[in-house]
Length: 85
Image (cartoon, rainbow, N blue to C red):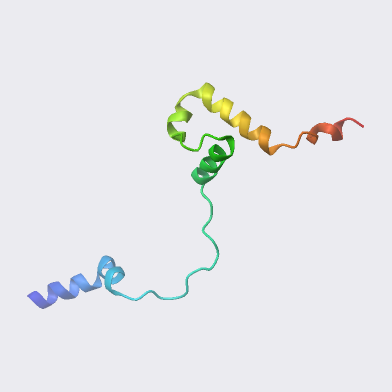
């Protein structure tokens, strides 16, 4: 009975991941940036890198002020000049 149990354990995915060798090649591209990573980078740019962005997002007025500050960094000052010709 012990042999059947050990065979079952060896077929399970967890055991294969732990003991088995990976197949194929690892991608050489850098990992995709997540939305959360973008938020943290924006906080760094504005100078609020140590703040907890989830807590900040709970206060709608402060979050809106942060988004406005980040957007002002991203948009060039003369971006609307093409409308005036």
